Image 1 (tube, rainbow, N blue to C red):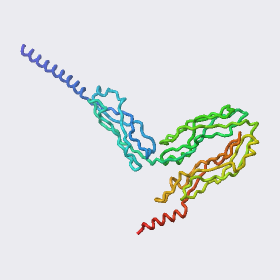
Image 2 (image 1 turned 180 degrees about the vertical axis):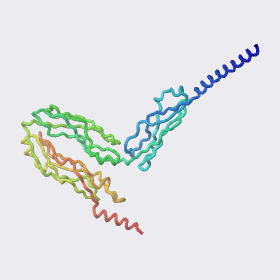
Image 3 (image 1 turned 90 degrees about the vertical axis):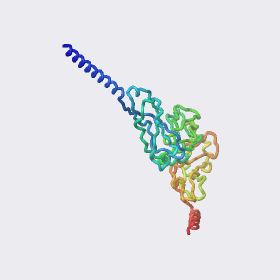
Image 4 (image 1 turned 135 degrees about the vertical axis):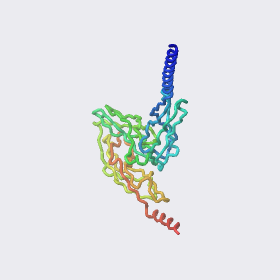
Length: 337
């Protein structure tokens, strides 16, 4: 009988030890279990280039995959950052690696998957001078009218990707309210710079508004004020889409009688277009569109001002003069064997 009891107790102890071992093994394996988590982390750009600009938009976030024990992954991820270095960005390269510093992670967490490289395209940044256009709302008092709104300055130099200038012909201002005005006034207005613009040499302009009482004023129109060409490259000829403008002035009736066509000047500045004799090309374009015409009164008459003119913008086609073409041909012939 005793031997049966001893044998039974041995078996019970063995089973209890087996069960205890299984429990301990389960908790050990659970403790070693590795979990993977994918995170979206902010992308920080460094060394942005000045000579090229991105076509399109950069992603704000990139993905990484990290792994570790479940309790190890319960750390704050708010400070994690990925880095895109654009120091070597150019118009030919398209694939750019995104770096992630593993030292940002706790020691018990490992990086399983780095951020994927980005496919980016860059294009050359060019500089252009664009006209400013004021945006208005409302109307003056019914007994008055606005005779002129002048911007000072009236142009802005911007840098943007070359393709942006296909649609970018002018820069507009913040809205200028004309509600109920009865007197001349001036106001500074912020420029509405499009997202495609890399930089601009000014951020605001001053709008000077001239107002006149309707009862005391009149208008006078000049149908063909010739457009003078300014700062044309001596190697180029220019053909204007419009050779003259129609100008309307308004103000005191006695003052209007003193103004004639010779007192009005209209001009277009072509100084931004140049001929490159080494390449034989016209830069930036052979045809420039949306060039601003400037009109001003050469005489100052009290209570008389410019009201409107048309067209405000014209197109210009450039051509290299024959004598400069011959010079270029002779240089090429002199270099040929």
